[in-house]
Length: 496
Image 1 (cartoon, helix red, strand yellow):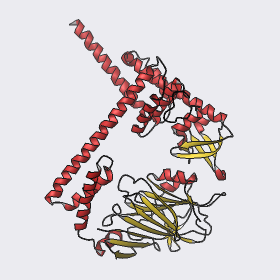
Image 2: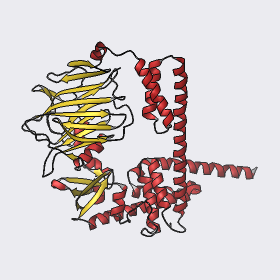
Image 3: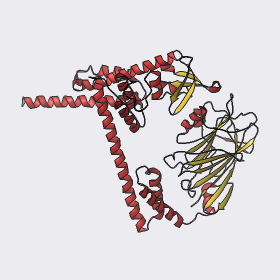
Image 4: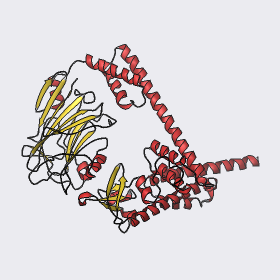
């Protein structure tokens, strides 16, 4: 009777408290990513005063304490920036290392710090993401940069248990788990730090953090297992369909999808089998005709070249050139022109760019692709930054300025990251573009192998291998920070 009723009330009260805690964790999820630790601490402290939250108050106090510790870390980093004012430092933002003279300013936490790099170029590096919206062209300081400014000893992966205090070791692990990405790398990094030496005795956050890291790693392992199981399920279905000799094109497409998206969880023998199936089906397909290619792309000129390849040229003397979309570029003097300087790199990336979708019957995923781009550099437009992107890979040409040579950078993946690296001076020196001249940029790309070769005006200026980006990446586009004219593009690729 009465005892059962009391027990029911207790259980319901605990369920309400747990539900409230889950809602609060969801409410603050984005705040942790935005490094708003002081706000998080105040929020947990204020909510924990509610009487009905008594069952979860210890958990809320742990989150508030964690947020206060991370607030302290950033206070130390700000003090470290002020102490280095006027000195040369190297700091990372994302994967890019910037070296130069640091200017702390009046409000490093709110407005960021400035780094004057070679050539007098000034970059703003932000402690918190909120600064990025207020300061175009700024970049977020990496966790390693925050730790360096805060005075944490360098993390060599082992730490040897001597250079870092137990309190700082816990602080670093908390920060790595909250701020790192992707999730699997953040959890693994935090685990490495936890294992590297002594931790504070009697600190409840130690057990809490160890439990969170272990749960994250188990969840990741489970997700990877599910992904591998999904891939093998798709492979089993593909084998049955291939044996039935029905839907040959759909089988080939599924084989290509498995190769592109599940290579990391399939065995070498399974990948070899998939490539064999794909290649056999490809060889048995009816070759695409000139009419199909004309309909798909509408090029200015078309050649069918052996074996099973096509060469398409697009000239830009008018407002349209087949299926090549002009974006925001306009016809001018026999080409398509970027008619104004971009306000910033972000503005350049946001503007619609001349783009060709590399659709069927071209097969840019399966074989070597050759691209030649002719551009005219106007007399009154000194070279700054030109970008050619093809199938998820990028070639970036920076101009010579402020005592720095012109450079060519080859990258894959996210274009904003590649632009940041180019602006930081990464890349191989070359002769560079010349105002008032016409140049030809040639790219030879094998997407499957991740290999790129770049020629400029007939001379090899860069070569390398980069990770193949996930996804299809089946388009070709050009961008320019300064006004240039795009005169023609020629692409040669495997055809169905």
